[in-house]
Image (cartoon, rainbow, N blue to C red; front, side, top):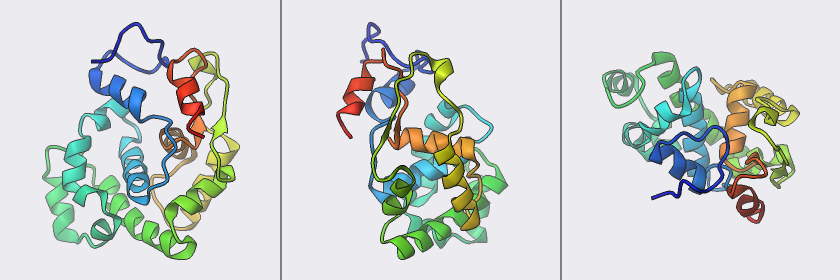
Length: 194
C-alpha cells in the first residue's frame, strides 16, 4: 500500500491504481517495443478522456488487443472490430479501435525500417531522457518541440490519434522526459534511471 506521506506530482489522485502507476511506471525509460506499443495504443485510446479511465481498463485492453502484440493486432479483421465494439471492458469507440489496428501495422513498418520502434522513438530525444526541473504542475507543458516533431513524423507515416498532446503524454509515460516535479519523491529516482 502506498504511503500517503510521500510527495507526489499534482495529477495523482487518491486512487491506489493511479498511485501505483505514478510510483512504479510513469516516467521510467522504456525501450521494449511491446511495452512502447501498449503505451502508444493506450494514449490514443485516452484522447478526450482521463488517464484513470483507461488505466482502470488496462487489463481489459490487454485481453482485447492480444496482450498488445503488434503482429497479432495488425492482423485483426472486421470480425475483430465487431468483437471489440461489443466488449464492455473497453471504451467502444470505432475510430479509436480502427486506429489501433492501423497503428499496429504502421508500428511494424517502423520496426522494419529502423530495426525497432524504440530506436525510432528515442531518436526524437537523441537517445536519452530529457531532464526537466518543474517546481509546479502548472509548469509542465502539454506539448513540446519534440512532441510536435514526433507527432508530425508519426502522422506522415500514417499513424492515427497521435497529435502532439497525445504524443507528449506518451513521451512522459515512457520516460523520454522526466516530468516529475522536483519535490515529487520519484523525481530523483527517475533521474537516476537515465
